[in-house]
Image (cartoon, rainbow, N blue to C red; front, side, top):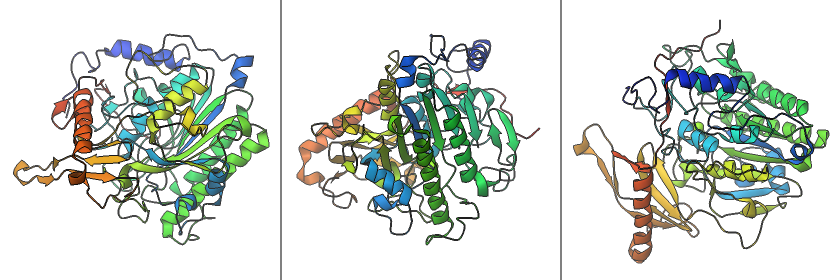
Length: 489
Ligand code: MG
């Protein structure tokens, strides 16, 4: 489907020549797409005082898959220690139950519908290989915000925001990229019409199909190398693991060792990886000026062995199990040790929060949905969630809204090809503080709360859109005309 492919070649009002000029200049290190300031790589005093940031972003790891979030199956001593030395965020959300939309929010601080990454443009939830669509290079990513502040930036892992050169991490603010461009089940091994799963260094395919058994190990080595090389200047590392997305893989040391099959093996290797990275920070003496965030891009899938307990629902749904993630943040001396924060926070908050910590502000020329959560991270007792409401979209459909402890599942129809057979979902209200598993509908007892949340939902429909309805403040995705497969040359 090429519905957004309008003249001249891009739907966002940028013609191809301008587009490539922007991308080319960004590659040459002169300007950032969407930014006006010239980059500075000077290692001056102020840049040395800026904190480092590492985001460890699992794929499909569930709320109940870590020891520190209640798992009895997986041994995760390193992440558990990270939680004991830092803070657990127990109401931390992603903006979609699947990969691509969720990642677009982490990168931009915006809801997927804001940046039009809530669907693939080809009747799919996520982008597939040789996609015409990608995250618009005119969006300002978290990496671009930090790069402008003198940060060295690396993305190591699964990208999934466009596999064409125009959309790769190297064009979205990352100095260095090593990883796979989309999900690990999208190569020729699983889907014969697709190219073999490519492993990229920057924009070049260096291995195809990628040896998935050693990916977690190699990602870890890449991160350690990058952190070590940049220990004397501020850095931002984004580590979106390929695991524990199916098909699960792990290196020999972990294979067959867990109590939960291949899924548990992969989860335990990610725990090992996290421990190696934290040990590196200590060894280099930069532990005290590095904020590490560990979380996941969406809930565990129904079939593959993960757990979202005590939440209901799975990957892809707007139940808590699809979109509430285990989250641990650690920053010795800045985030109090051993604390839990149950205030509503989300991946969209990381960009504006990191911007402030790096001594700048989030972009002011556009709507950013994320909020500054520094008071919550500092453990201030009076600190409350900065979000009046949080919106749960499934692809293009608004299905639920949360405000405070209340979550309202909106009445809607599950879209089917034959609309006459569409399933009607009833309105339901849950008190998440008393009923985290969403089992007891209390809508009848709280008509005032229902009305308040319905009004908030209407605000979102107007702003961001809903099924068959455009929002007034959406921005265009990026598009190319003739996408090419990524192959090893
Ligand atoms: Mg995922």
